[in-house]
Each structure stands twice: as structure tokens, then as C-alpha cells.
Image 1 (cartoon, chains in turn cyan, green):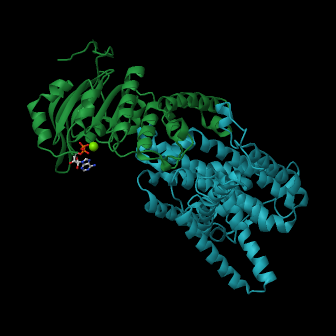
Image 2: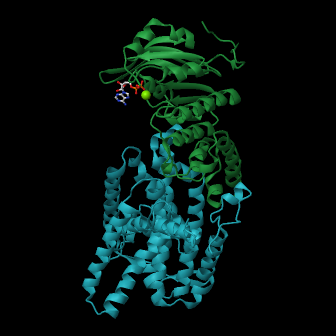
Image 3: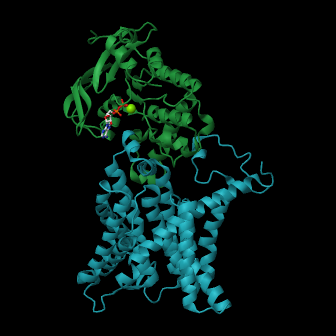
Length: 358
Length: 271
Ligand SMILES: Nc1ncnc2c1ncn2[C@@H]1O[C@H](COP(=O)(O)OP(=O)(O)O)[C@@H](O)[C@H]1O
Ligand SMILES: [Mg+2]
């Protein structure tokens, strides 16, 4: 009897438009925000930050980005890794070229650069769909990795071919480089995640989001209500790539610190983020978080249980993990394309009726 | 016959001058001639029907009007001007809305969101306002929601407002599609077999809605119907097509007594 929407009537369209129309959901959301901002920074340590929290936050942004493109606008992309690389290398070039500018601004600018690149690589989507578009974005993925490997200008002609994040501070506190405290890195990522989620939520529930979903569900009908497919698709590629680019920049500058492009942003990255979106739920901002949380924690949990507790060999556990992910992908694609987010919704609906199911 | 000028119908509606005119339209698909040298016009405020057996080219004609097909020959005149070749979304922005023979709704969205998409061309908030959901974005969401709720009331679909369209039965889907078209507040509404596959009761409802739309909002309606009976009751003037040719054009009475029309209909088995 604790989860109720009874008595929670909406008296205005404004109230009906809220992100969390049910009061209980709203309070839970504020609680999560409060813990994330006010509690975790004080209890965080290196292990928590590097094994779970930083990758979770950064992948959440990437998953939100890909979800906008694939889940909301219906355009499949296998180029996420490549676009993250664009964000990372843009941030690197900006950080080294303009050392006096705040690194947060560089991350945002890296997002804009990636948005432009993403829109350009989105051009084929005006002509091709589905499988063929996926192949085209795959080509973009390989091209971008090749480009950042081949053209030495992108890594400032360093001998190793790697890029390294120089130390940069925000309000005097280092947020990149070796001297960064885990809480500082965490807060930067959390800030970007919070803003990204808000923007993504607002865009997807309004005019632009409806245009994207219209194109996704039936492009012919979208045109007949006045949606220009060109601007709808390219805006989806641009907005999506903006988030993916920001994620790439953070992944490089805040999380890894040093990056070799093929290793950090190869095709596996594209698939990883795509799996997050599928498992979490296509067309759901919450699902992007759920998918990222799941795939970031899965290897950590498996290692804790399999290797540390049961004493299984590491490579066995690693294979086991692939099997689990593969099985889950098949399950969600066939049985529940709206992913964990939908399972969560169904569970809530059941709970709402509990204990009287009829 | 009916030149510019205004007429008052027997039931008191005003029918204005010609608003859209098709001139000598020919449309071919490879060897198939879907439309052969057809001309007709649509006057402001009237209900204009296009009838004919299956495969006559009726849907193709609507597709020419709404910009999906580009005819090999002929011209489309709209509001007294020759219309240049246009994409469907540009036609929509000129105030021409339509429904499809095979329902074309957004299955993944709720009824409310589907109908809201009908007002997309009116929503002008910038990207920044949309990102923060403030100012213009929030205001126009509410304004347009109010307009949409009126249509929801009008078509009596309040109870399914928040239902995903994919879960609705056929008859209701047809109604939601009409709602989405109406949400655009079009000056011309094109309906492709709005009553196909419906039972008698649903057909009566739909006929009533079509008459009410025309009467209350003065919307010009061009509708395709397979079934002679329904059309005769609804429309002011009828174009009859058969095998891509126009074989009749006039009031329901004129058309009913036209020998070519009678032959075409008797020569074709239809349900
Ligand atoms: N996209 C298309 N490609 C090829 N042939 C088409 C196409 N659309 C319609 N046709 C052909 O044009 C003719 C008229 O079809 P249509 O306009 O759908 O008829 P109606 O709506 O009167 O039943 C048919 O012979 C049909 O096969
Ligand atoms: Mg047809």
C-alpha cells in the first residue's frame, strides 16, 4: 500500500506534463539526486570511482546519446566508438592548444565538434535505412579510428601515438591528470550526467522528440504531418553525437587520462554502448542509465563472485560474462525491446495494484 | 458549370470558389497507367468524393495531391496558383492534411502524442527553449495540448488518451488518424477510405464526424470511398474513376444516373 497514484489527480496540462507525474516517483528521484550529489562524494574512493562510478556516469551519457539516435529516432548506429574518439581527440587538441581555457568548456566544445561530425556522417541516413545504414556507420567507425591513428597532427606528433590529458583544474582543484582526487573526477562527470539527462528528457518529450519518434515509427506519415526528414534525421545525429562526444571527451580526459584510439574507441565500444541501450531500453532515458549500470557492474560482480568467492579461473569468468550478455541481448531483442526500463514499468504497475491484482 | 463564386447548399452550408484544381494529370508506373489525363476541381468548403473500383487510381490521385507521386503530365493548381513540385512535408505545411488507406499512425507513441504530432508545424520554440523546457517551449506545449484535447473530445476518444496506439483496435485507430489530421487544422483534408473495414455502427460514427468537421470548421474535404451508398449521402460532388480514367463527375444524383458509371460498377464485382 505504499506505491499509489490514487488522489494524485492532475488539474492542469502542466502538471500532466511532468517528468514524474506520480508523487512517489518524484520523491524517489530527488532522493537519488541527493545521494549522488551530497553523500557519494564523501564516501568515494579510488576503487569505487574507477571500477564503477566514473565508467557508469560516462557510459550513461554515451548511452543517452545513442538512445536518442537509435531508440528515439530509429536510426541504427555502429559508430559510437568512433564518435567518442572524435570527442576525445577534440578535447585533447583544445586542451593542448588553449591551456588557459577551462577544461569544462573544452568538453562542451568537443561535444559540438562531434555533433558536426555526426551530422555529416548522418547524411547517408537520408537515403538508406536499417541494415545498410548500420553498415555505413560501421564504415564511419573504422574510418575515424584509422584517421586518428594515421594523422599525427591529432596526437600532436607524440612518439607513442597516444594522447595524454594534461593536468587542468576547476576552481583550483585538479580534475584531469595524475593528481586528480576521485571525488573531483566524480563530481565533474556527475555534473555532465545531470545536465545531459535533463536536456535529453526535455528534448525527447517535446517537439523535437515527437519529430524523431514520428520518423522512427513511420517516415511516410511523419512527412505527411509536415516533418522534414532531412532536418529530423540530421538533428538526431547531431544531438546524439553531441552527447557521445562529451562522453568520449570525459572518458579520455577524466577517466583514462591516456588513450590509444583503437584500444579505447574501437568497434567493441560501439557494441558495448549499443548493448547498454538494448538491455536498458530503446527510447528511454532511464533505460540508458539502467543499461549502463548493468553492463558496468556485471564484470565487477562476476569477478567478485566467480573469481574471488568461488575461485574460478579468470578466463572462465570472462567467457561466462560474454555468454550472459549474449543471452540477454537475444532475450531483450526478441521478448522485450523496451528493455529493463519496461520491466521496471511493468513491475511498478503490478505493485500499484498489489495486493489486489484485479 | 461551377465557376468561381459562392453557392449555398440545400442544408445551408456555404461552398466557395475553386481552391484546388487538377489539370490533365497523367501518372504512370512503368507500363501501368494509374491516372490518365484526369482533370477535376475541389471547391472551398465542399465534400468532394472520389469513387471507383479497386485499382482505379484513387489513392494515386491523393498521393499526387499530397506530393508523394509526381505526375508525368499535368498541373496542380492551388489557391489560384500553379503549384511547383513539392515534397509531402511542404504540402502539409500549406495546410493540407490526410489519412491513409492503410493506417499510418506512430505505433510506438500514445494516442495523445500521435495527435500532438499533428500540430508540429505550429510549434516554433527554439532548441534552447526546448532543452530547458521553459518559456516558449512550455507555453506552446500547453496551448497545443488544449487544442488537441478539443479534438479528443470532439472525436470521443478521451478514454484512450494515454494508450499506446499499437494496442488499439482497427476502428479506433482510424479515428485517431483522423484526429491527428484534424489537429493540423487543415484547410483541405484528404481521407483515403476512412470507413474501409468498419462495421455499420463505426461507419455511421465516422460519417457523422466527417459531416461535423466540414460543418463546424468549414474544412474542405476530399474523400475516397469504395462504397457508393455512403458516398452518395456524404458528398456534394463526386468524381468517378475507372482504370485510371475519369468516367463521371457531378452531383451524386447526376453520377448515379450516368450510364458509364453504372456499367463500370455493374461490370466489377465488389463487396
Ligand atoms: N507505387 C506504385 N508502384 C507501382 N504501381 C502502383 C503504385 N501505386 C499504385 N500503383 C498502381 O496504380 C494503379 C492504381 O492504384 P491505386 O491508386 O492504389 O488504386 P485505388 O486506390 O483506386 O484502389 C494500380 O494498378 C496499382 O497497382
Ligand atoms: Mg486505394
